[in-house]
Image (tube, rainbow, N blue to C red; front, side):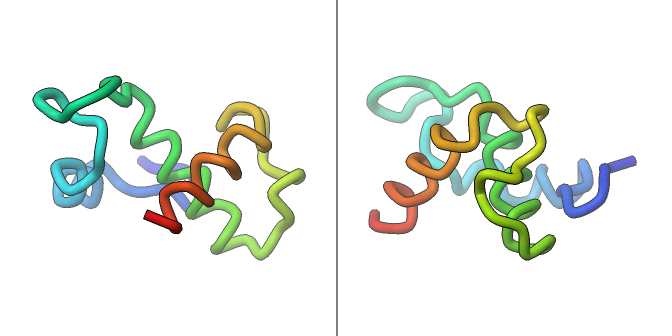
Length: 73
């Protein structure tokens, strides 16, 4: 069962192949795509500030920086 604001396994299976960083893509393979997406969803759905991101998602500054690059692209 997914935690609050996170993707279920079925939802993840449907979107994972659309995200950059998968095997076969140029550059570094992103092993933490699901964690990243769940972190973004947590911030957007909770309405909290990025700095309030729970530690289980990693450093909030790194997640935010990746999000801004992703949104710009």
